[in-house]
Length: 436
Image (tube, rainbow, N blue to C red; front, side, top):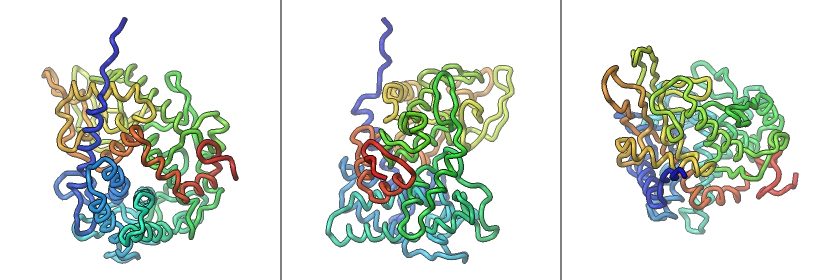
């Protein structure tokens, strides 16, 4: 009888969550509540990472990583910054129409890199604000202020404007060129965007916008697993950080007789199956080496390795089975899959610790590694990312906690906007009930 592969223990999982959470404490600018996109020198703030931090603070309090008073103080600094910051088309504005620029300077808070006013990253910021509001529910003045600020920020977002006279929501806007031509259609990380947009108390999306987004869904069968397709693994994870999709279904999922949680479980198994088949013959891939998603990478570079020319990329949304895939795998994507398939994830995390101890440092797992990226003829373990990305840290902390206790799911199941958005999107069943 074959011995079972060792799994990450409960103590090891707890340590990974605790170490990863420290990113949101140590890297925060206490003057304005901004957090960096990554740990590289001079990195700007990502507004999505601020949303992840706001979501992570309740976990930190419950687990004893941070005191309640310290978490409240940090949440207020962030929420006040976004509430009080200038809105408009001018160069000092941090946002416009209730949405915010994707990247802001860590010190001044001003827009950097000519970045777009991002609808999806603003969504994650607002989701974090609502999570904080649900957790800090006391009658003390500072906790009431958290709830008031979260309500104000959420109510400010003008979803009608973000549609730009269409049914679906645009990716964003720039003052120099106007709306980005791309729209959120087809299955992606924007599922929560539509839920929050539909529930807006001020500028709600019409129900038709949700149906327009699902019309471009693609159902596929890969390696024996049938599921609503998306190539990068993060698409199957991010909305689930806040919303418990177990047992609730929209019209599309009722037609397919599954739910989005089961869909993500199948996506995990498809990822593992792809790695085991390893069609591109990349180093390391197998049962315990998978996790192909948006991540840092060793490129841009072209190398001749074992007689084959291979192209490597830097930060990129990698996916299966059509690529891009240059052999880069992300431990954060594995950890972020924990609630869906712990029987697959826990042994894989244990194997990463065993085979790549250099992957772990002060904030838990580094972003990614690539066993294929070596110099020809040399015995090397490949490339390891040297930095941490806030977009990776959030899913690790949140999905470990949802697996361990379901804390965030319990919180957000009580959020009236989550409930209203899901119902307007046509979700029924499970914890949501059957009412229209």
